[in-house]
Amino acid sequence: MRNVFNFVARNVGKKIKYSNISSQDQSGTLKKDLDLLSMARIIGKVTHSYCTGLPLQADIEEKVYKMLFLDIGLMNAVCGVNWHIISQMDDVKLINEGAMSEQFIGQHLQHLLADTPNRDLTYWLREGRSSNAELDFVIGIAGNIIPIEVKSGASGKLKSLHQFMGQKKTPFGIRFDLSLPSVHPIKTIINIGKKRKDVDYSLISLPLYLIERLEVLVEYYLR
Image (cartoon, rainbow, N blue to C red; front, side, top):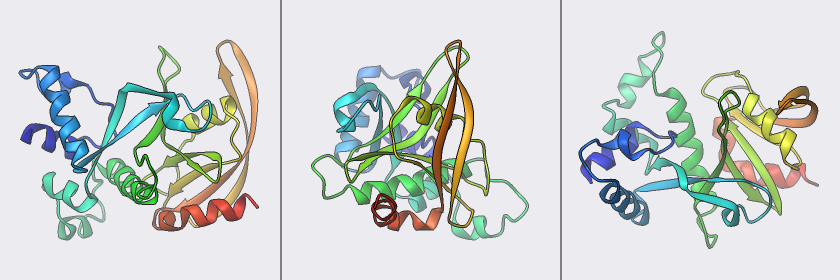
C-alpha cells in the first residue's frame, strides 16, 4: 500500500497500469490498495467517460482511469520537492509541472463536487494507432457538459480539445493556463477517420487561480 501511495503522488494524471506500479505484486492486490486509498479520499479516481450525455458517470469505462493525490503540497512532498525549492527554480523546468497543474485543478474540481452524490471526476480518452486524444477533465455544470484542458504554461496546443468539440455537443471549451482571462472564437479542421470536419467553438481561457470561480463563470457565460 505504501508503494501505491507513493506511485500515485509521483504519477498524477497518468493512466493507471498495474504493471507500472509493481512487477512483483498481483493486479488484484494493487487494485484493492487503490480502492482502499480512494475510499479513504487519500487519492481520487478520474475515470474515462465516453461523454455521450449526462450524467457522465453513467457512461464510464471503469477499468480506464487515472489518479489524483490528496493535495498538491503533499504530492510535492512525496516527490521530494518543497515550496522553497520550487520558488528558486526560475530557469529550471520542473519535469512534473504538468502534473502539478492537473493536480491543482483536479483537487479544486473535487471540492466543487463535494456536496454532490458522486464526486468522482471523469475525463475523455480516445486511443488509436495514430489518433490518440485525451482531455484532462469533463464535468457537468448547469445541465451542460463542460470539457476542461489544463496547461502548465501560457500557451499550448489544443488538439485533444479540438477533437472533443468536433465529436460532442457542448456549448464551449475551457482552458486553464497562465494567461489572462479571455474568450476566443476557435475555427479549425479535424480528421475523423478519413474525413475532415470543420470545428467552430468558443474557448474560455482562464488563469489557474480562477478555478475557484469556475461554476459562477460558467453559469454567467451560459446566460
